[in-house]
Every structure is written in structure tokens, then in C-alpha cells.
Length: 321
Image (cartoon, rainbow, N blue to C red; front, top):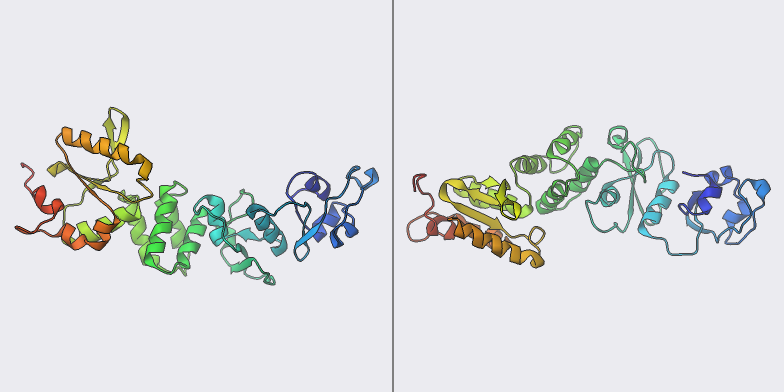
């Protein structure tokens, strides 16, 4: 962090008391809201001290405006002291894994340290900071792989675990290999088996929670052929990616989760479907309701009672057909 003089002139607006004294900030400026003129002899230059407000004990806000999420996180890090890093949901937010800042600032400190809890801060004591701390990112934080596993560890349902792991890979924040390596380095990890299964699915090309559910509850549960997933295909408009392609049967299955297929892009889906049909492919499109609520019907095979997936296209059909 910068010295107090530069700090007050336009960088961040939080200061631990010892750090501020090291920057020749007058003690009175930190003990009460005030405006003071600082002489050049203090090494700061002439000017007025902004109003100073406490954020946490020994940590102060030196501006009059609202304290945003990033500034609040910096204040929590300063309060927690040496070795403190953003972790869990706070690190996930900084990495772009979650879109909204958490209500509490999640801060990890070395396991041997004791930091008094404060409203607005969730303190995590960790023995893994040496390996999980990001070497350069600011604010200080754990690596994205550690953040993913920490969020998964406290998830309440398998769906939440699947969502966070797939979101990390779908947004290209990390890779299955890096997550797998981080998972191996943690001796205590809730949902370990599930996370391993999801990473294996991602390696196989599954890119969304809906695709994973389809692979498990439709293909896997009913012994259907395993399709080719998200493979690039040349197109007159560029490169296209089909969710699942069964090449031997000239069948394409598109899985419409809201994240992957927003409403404003529906016209593109229809155009791709129409082009596929004109090229001789059959296209079936399913959403969460069909895959989750009626997956037995989707996967059912038998004379007279097959679904569109199994009967209308003739599943299973010989490769010659």
C-alpha cells in the first residue's frame, strides 16, 4: 500500500492507524472527523485533510462519499492485518465467478493468527494460504481454484456445487486440470466425489449444468449412445457449436438453459435449426423442464412408447440407416 500522503490524494481511501502514522498523518486526523491543513514540512504538501471516518478498529475512511464494495473489502483486509487475503465468496467475486459482491467480506488469515470478529467480516483461518494465495493480484486474494473449492465446500446442495464448478470453467476462469490439482492438495473437501465427477464431465465437453444433467439422467441412465459435445463445426456464418451431436443418426440435440441461450438470441437458434434440417439433420431442442422433470420419458426406448429422442428418429438405428 502507498504512504499516507499519496493515499489521501487520490488512491484508496482506507488506512490502518500504524500505516498512517508511518506516512506522517497527524494522530488527530485519525481520532475524529476533521479538516486540517498539512504543512510541507510534514512531507505531504499543503492541503486539507479530508473528513476521516472509522471503518473497522484502527482502519479509517478518508473521504465523504459512499463506501463501495471494493473499498469495504480493502478496509476489511487492512483490519485483519498481515497475511490477510480475500477468500471464499469475496475472492470468487473478485475473479468474476459470482456477479454480486457478498454481503460479508470473507477474509482468510494464517491459521496461527487470531483476529477479533467484526460486523461485516467473515474470518477464515487457513493452513493452505502459502499454496493458495495469488502471487500478484490486488486486492490480495486466494487463487480462483481455491475460491471455487471453498464455495463448493460450503454449498448446501449438489446443484450448487455443479453450478459453481461449471461456471468457473464456462467463464474460462480456470481449467479442469488446475481445479483437479487444487482438489488433490486439499485433505478436507466436502463434495469431493461430486466435484471430481463434474470435472471429468467438463473434460468430456459438458459445458453447462443442463448438459451435465442430460448426460447423466438421459444418456447414462438409459444406455443411450454418448453424443459428441460442443465440437466446432464450420458454418457459412463462421464456427458453430452443437450441444450434442449423434453423428451416426444425423441427430442434433440442443439444450436450452437460460444462461447459454438468452431470449434475445433465440432467433439465432431457429436459424441454426433450420439450416441443420436443410442439410439433412434432425434437431431436437430440450430445456430444464424436459430433462429434469420428464427425463424417463426422454430416455425410454420401446415400440409404441418412445419419445422424440428415441422413437421419432428411430433410436437406436443401425449405422447404415
